[in-house]
Length: 107
Length: 117
Image (cartoon, rainbow over all chains, first blue to last red; front, side, top):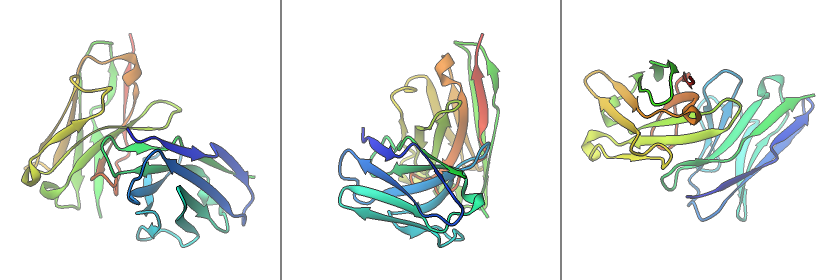
């Protein structure tokens, strides 16, 4: 199985800050990497697919990228409604696997 | 707009069975690959399994932790996905989500399954 190592597990930042989360796959996943947002008591929501493509309707302050073997997820200009847990997910091979999640809190 | 609505969750004793349903609308269900993902209380997301469209063979794949106990099926005439769970264990306690394709483009709101004596 492909292991997805996500860090940090939690982050606390102020409104307007920039937050970056990273995810590393245990093997090549051919850029088949998505980022999901989950708010308490709700189902997850796809924000970014294929490393850096923004899903329709998702604010442009969310972005994704890749630096070497690490995939990155960035929230620029953090807003109160961005408080949530974020997960990376690979869909290159079955079983689909997820990172452990990053809880983003607003100071 | 795509809507996925899970139902059928509840409390079941260890060793028992339960069937979840996922009613889909707003998409061409017959062509959709559908996935089940679960989330234990306070934990992360875990893939349960996936069923391909009938046109692509209707093949089903399962996570090792549920293989031989869970069965995924679909009724394209009802736009509904199913998860039949048997031999339930306490560690199967989770919110179960259905989602579309391997990319998990759309998710339902989830159904809580509690396995406890």
